Image (cartoon, rainbow, N blue to C red; front, top):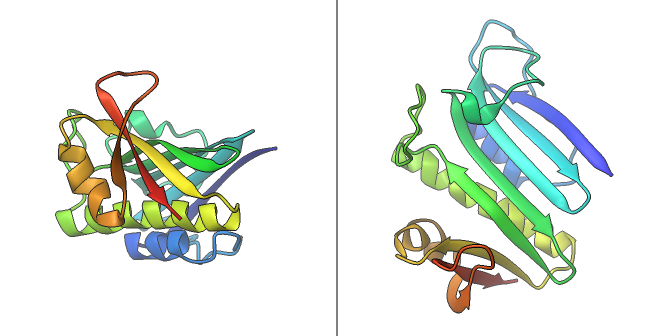
Length: 174
C-alpha cells in the first residue's frame, strides 16, 4: 500500500505533539491560515519503506515540495519495517551541523526534542507492529551515536553496516 499525506501545523510544538501522540490518529490540529508561518510534515510509504519529511513553509498546498533542496528543511526520518525489527535508514535534524546551508536552523533544545520525538515515534510504531528491536547505522567515530542515540537507550554493536564498512549498527531492544 502506498501512502502520501502532508499536514500543516502552526508550530513545531504541535508537530512534536502529533508525532508523540497515538500514531494511528489520523486527525490533526492542522492549520489553514495561508498568511502565517507553518510547519509541514509529509508521511509517505511504499511497501515496507516509510518516510517522514518536515519543513517550514508559508505555502498552504505544497505537495510537490522537495525538502532536501529547500533552505527551510527541519527534519527527516526514513525507516523500514522488517520481519523482526524496524531499521532506521536515515534520521536528520537541521541543527546547523550539516554541510548544507539553510535559512532556518533549529536551536539546540528544539533539535534535541525533535530527535527524541522521531525516535519515540519509531518506538511506538515498533510496539504497535510487535517488533522486538530498532536498528540504526551510525558512523564509527561515535560522535553522532553519543549525540543522538546513546541517551535514547541504543547500544552499539560490533556489527558493521552492510553498505558502508565504516558505519556500525546500534540497536534498541523494545
